[in-house]
Image 1 (spheres, one colour):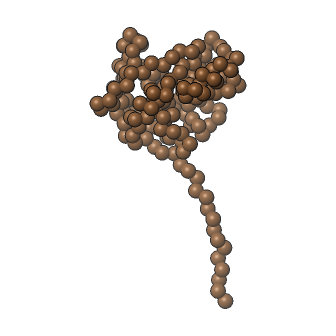
Image 2 (cartoon, helix red, strand yellow):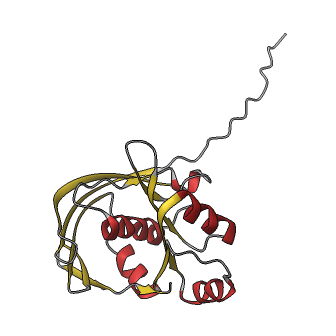
Image 3 (cartoon, one colour):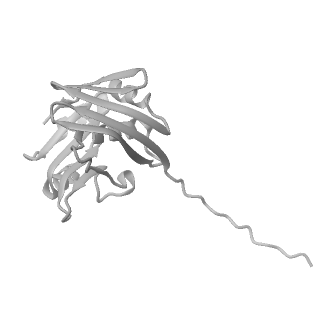
Amino acid sequence: MPVIFPLLVTSMALTATILKAKVSIVDLDNHVYLNDIPLTLAQHPSETDNRLMLRLLAWMLNVDAEARLSFTKGLGEDEEPDIWFKSDIGVIEHWIDLGQPSEKRLKKASNQAQKATIYTYGDRSAAIWFKKLKYSADNLSIQFINDETADQMAQLYSRNMELQLMIQDGDIQVLSGDMSIAIKPEVWC
């Protein structure tokens, strides 16, 4: 008599794509000078290249001279922002998120952190989202990155990146190889 084996069906979970970046920063406005900081980024399966590059840009724009900002689990974790700086005693000093978070999430960010920064993007959807917002706080900053900038940043996407950020007199440039991108976030609040 033949032996019949049950059909074994397994579902494979999608895994994150791991990217490496080497980042150098010359921020003359804030006196931040970092050279060849190695970063490892995990790109969630549902995260677009544009969003990942904007997350990296947000890190570069907010990092301090000691490079103390950390990427979190991001899209995989509802309780944490995309990027944060936590003190040695666990106080969230800076909460950084991307996208168009709910008012509940904005309130959570501004209540739990000393400073909260949101980088919103999407030329049409971001403006509609912002007009509907009723929540504001003294420690909350919302900055808009336009689609052209997001698309240019996505062109720098690579599994192994080398990027330089330069800031002087409010002018921001991201450089990689022979490509240079002028960055002009609009401060909405």
